[in-house]
Image 1: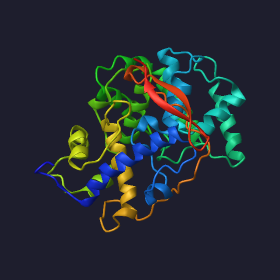
Image 2: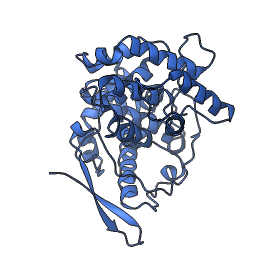
Image 3: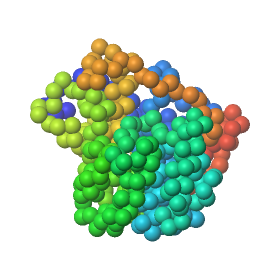
Image 4: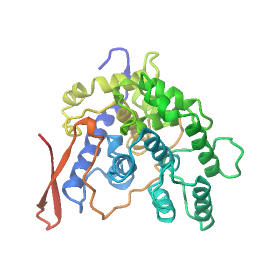
Amino acid sequence: MSEHMEPTPVFDSYWRFAAERQAMFFRRIADPIGPWTTDPILGAFRFTNAYRASDRVSQYLIRQIQYHPDRPSTPTELFFRTMLFKFFNRIETWEALERKLGPLTWKGTDLDAVSHVLDQMMGRGQRIYSAAYIMPAPALGKARKHANHLALLVQMMSDKLPDRLRQAATFRTVYEQLLRYPGIGPFLAFQYAIDLNYSMLLEHSEADFVIAGPGARDGIAKCFVHTEGRDAEAVIHWVCDQQERAFEASEIGFQTLYGRRLQPIDCQNLFCEISKYARVAHPDVAGISGRTRIKQAYRHDPEPLPTPFYPPRWGLNIVEVERTSTRGAKRFEMGLFA
């Protein structure tokens, strides 16, 4: 532990939460029935995975939108699909659009038709945006939020942003290019940079750069009495750097993602999640948000978890071997290609 930062009991829970949430991910792959944890808080409320890329929406983005073999893989089309999906960040919205309009491409899709379909969905009372985080509307003169987001996408494409991002020398430069657009603040710019970096459009290391969101800042405030002047991003990098020592010192068994250690984006997310977890586990430890309840309850999903798929350059080419559990349910043993 750094002699310059004073931890609270929440920081110990940070590592235990990370290990148990990751263990739940692997348990669910092996056994689709569950239960997958004995932790009463993790069993009652919804929390994201320890690794951001393992979450349901990220998995859909990577597998179905960025690397699906039937989709064009040019930089322009990769950028267009990724941003169109991420503006709404909702699988159901994407699938509704493709059912109505066919495969969504920059060359072949009329964005006025996309806007019309979204109008119809809203008219039926359907939600088109994810509640995962706030998506501010860019002020581009349209009456509806989604029309402004589509106008923003047109502006990005007209600016040849896909080509400019490919030429960016650093991950920070990618972030700074995205940050220049209306309606995209620091947190969203970083999230979009991470999403684009999953694809073949970019090849930066996730270890290079991080931006802390409001939830992560609240989690850091709960984990440390003080950080000796370090900003939130410096704390995240420090935590990421010492993860193996921390797990060993606390005698916590942590199963990495097939050999991939937690990256700064994952540690950032974990600070956000421990902020929520601590509202119940450590109600006496105040953060900066003032929130005291966890809003999203966990709902059991009976569907088996698909075999995870990650950006191929990560070297996590996962294979599945079908097994039969003692309960008679199908299960899978995960491994790596040699």
